[in-house]
Image 1: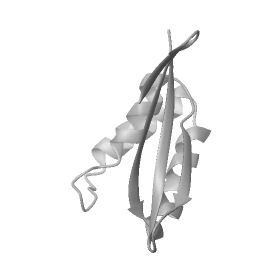
Image 2: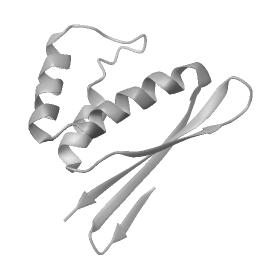
Image 3: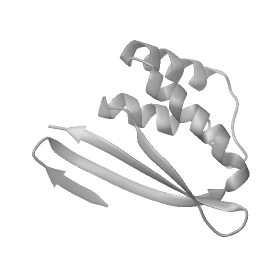
Length: 96
């Protein structure tokens, strides 16, 4: 979902995920949110060069890139869903 407001745009997305992966993703997002622009750039380069890829083929660059390009903290939440899963929501604000 995309919403326009006085300050710019909000992009809201979500997906179901395995509940056992929630803590790892939360830790990753908290780390990303704790970094400034220069630190994010460094983490991006480090992640790009480490050659590690997830089971789905991703190297973990997506969330870092979103934070870098939006210049904002990532707003997220997890809601327990059916047994063994959770719903992950992500809101990113992009200012004009």
